[in-house]
Length: 467
Ligand code: FCB
Image (cartoon, rainbow, N blue to C red; front, side, top):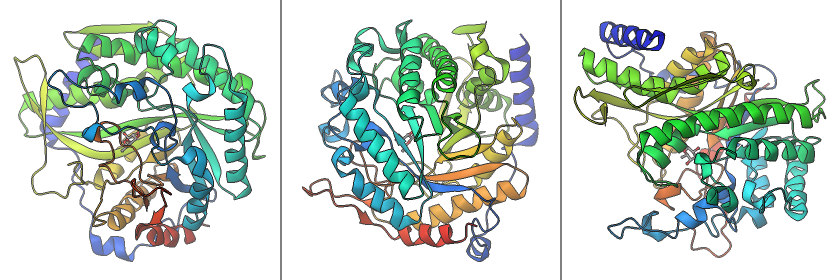
């Protein structure tokens, strides 16, 4: 009931205030501003990738999904592409390291692939672990802080076979893996990211049916989100218990966070129905996971579908920082009597990336200011643009770093900013159509050479402003 009252209050506020705070950046001001010049010492400025999207030779639920088709014969992945080779970073990781060095980056968020390290329940692949150790040691030797992401959308086949996130044992299995990784890499790694974007996984896999397990069952989606909450809480506890080595000598052996995809949901009009729908979308997508951590409760409410609310003490205090992945905004059109409470619409006449996502840097400032109120240090763990023609990337980077500076100037505590992505990679159901890389890759090139885009020089110039 309290929850409904809050939704109603948010909807009312949204209806009264219109589409949120008005904020428009002035390009001339961005051009004049010395980006990151005022950032605190130790601010992390770098790039991000994920294991399945770059490594190649992974075997998990996604590699199975990539072989499949929808009932109408369309392949699950555009052009029937697969990540079988991807950017082959499993072999070319030294090229990725060189690419980071050329950027002047001081941080890199990368994944370890659960299915590679634990191909069978309880097993541990020592050779794979040794290679990851080389990567982390190489990064550290180059003055680049590794931020290690433990779960980024892909499940080992043995977990998928038991039902994936529908399997009761999944949170404990992922937590056990996290503990093992903490023990194996903790002397080289202090910064951990438990889970990447649980809300995106649920939206794509359980609401849109575009990712494994490929269903459209909101109730299962809500249950999966609850399982992901439990997993995060248990993973944090395991990491703190098993990684006791302070690798960088700052007095803290672990810094644990998760990467939360946040999106602006603005109602399309001031009509209360749009306001209510925007509030529902925002609550489920942006707020539920954070409320769970703040309250120490697994709580997922989907009006008319399910209401889960139970204590889960491991969630309380489970964040040392909050990772935010930010890409775009959506306008929301509410529906009173339809199975889906809202429809998303695009803001007209706005720049869009190659995948059709609106480029809206002001949204990053809005969200950073909003999440600053939660009290955790904020870390922009992903922001980037799919841009095969190279028309947006330079300005996108400048404008989003500027958005971060603006939020800091207004009081948000932001500890880092990472561009998605270091290199072009396998963009899930879009296959090789999302060119997010600061370095471009021609996937027909047998050597998969990493070619700097013009944004590399932009990044370098910004990095030079750091103290
Ligand atoms: C994010 C994902 C990342 C990549 C970018 C474009 O939602 O975390 O893997 O696909 O979008």
